[in-house]
Amino acid sequence: NYLDSLFPPLLQNFFPQTVQYNGGIAKVKTWKISCYLEVMPGGVPCTNPNETLLQLFLPLLSVCNDLFFHWYRQQHACNQTETSNNKKSQKITQVKRVMTFITRYRPNPGEEALLKHVDGAGKVDGSVVVALPIDRWSASEEENAFEGGGLTFWDGKSKEIRYDTKSGDVAFIDRAVWHQANPITKGTRWALVIFYKVS
Image 1 (tube, one colour):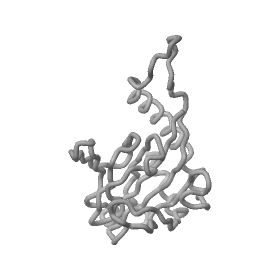
Image 2: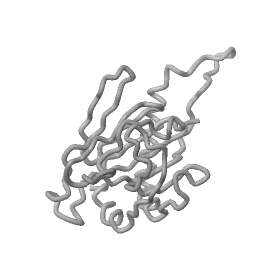
Image 3: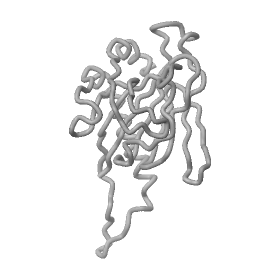
Image 4: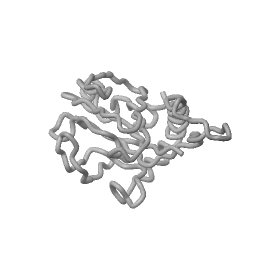
């Protein structure tokens, strides 16, 4: 399995970076469970992205770019408007990754979840979350298999929509959608997260 092949070098090169942010609904201002592969202009949220992991994940990121492009275009097809000369305006021609990171959730305080939030504080057009495999390389699968986890989304009317995730699942998240990575109570959960801008 392709995702499994990424895991041994991921484990060797995963170095979480401590970053400060607004704390979100959980009021956790110090975030120290993600390793950043690409960062926003100006070094946000950190100035030392992990180039080794970026190179390792580039083929997967390329596939995610294509998937996000087609998903976003389909989601926003009705938002394209006719101009006075019958040409489409707001045509989506490309997507650009503006931040990419890998997060390792563990059942420790401040590491078990990312509670209700909006990606990029609303400054991104959408995001992708890829569920990575259970780590079977640093310990047994039984020891590292997680309990809990998954994703929860809010539909804007306070209705919760929950999804359990397994290795290879991909979630597409539109701009300014409230969601969370649900708490785990056992094991380790890994996810690749990509923030996008669309033009």
